[in-house]
Image (cartoon, rainbow, N blue to C red; front, side, top):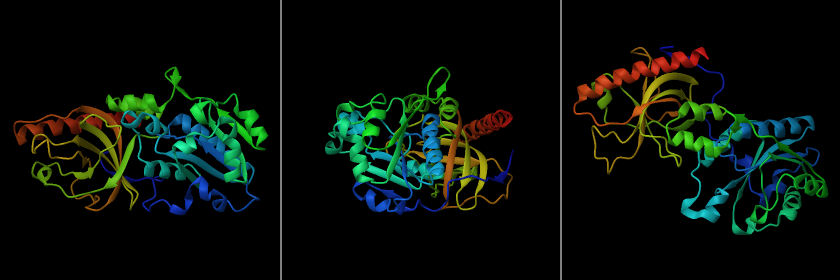
Length: 340
């Protein structure tokens, strides 16, 4: 447990192939093979949680059965931005991470449609025929049971089968996935993350909540007290509390993953809170001399558990003492997690 290991499934270190990402305006060219029918998942899919994954699995399975193309239609910005402005929902994952999740889940094409007033004004009764016009090889659509579409969100999954039939396509509304008696939703996950309930958020997500980024240099203060860190800037829209976390860090170049303890925040003990941008500083729980990622490395850091809020210490000795306690608490969390 107290070391590094290789893992089999990680996000590729290379960027997602941009040719996989299209809009509806160039979708016809993106799906030129009429012999391969398109099976399209519909939704924003922020978080790509367990309920979303059920939709993904249905779409990919349907495409494979028909020797077709599994594809996903998502939107940017989130539809609420158009109508709520600054009061719009805060995303769980940035768009680039959502794209990577789509690719990992087996989608060959990602249709990312700008959500404009013109698009939002398409009448519900014309929505599927509009998609069929843009993607002539469209054969089936998949969505969650609460999916709404068209102007004023007038269309729903009760209307979907009839409208799909008119357009000559199949439709599947996938039932919600429940956790602790209620449907899993991005709203529930956001609330859990913002309140530091990381285990609850992870239970509703299909994998531990994570960020990806590039390791940057720091002030090397951690090295002087025996806690060197890998530092990654991180300013998510849905922000978890500043504080200490048990984390798992993956070097995306080598595929090596490490258990660790991290602080996310603005380092109040050592700096000016008004000028310091939030960093995720991960101390890896490995023996001295273990090869670890260096500056410039692309890493993925998953949050396992929230340990305590960030605080200011009166001395470096006090800080070191607390970091030792955090390390012990993180190791205990990993022990518990590995037993489940």
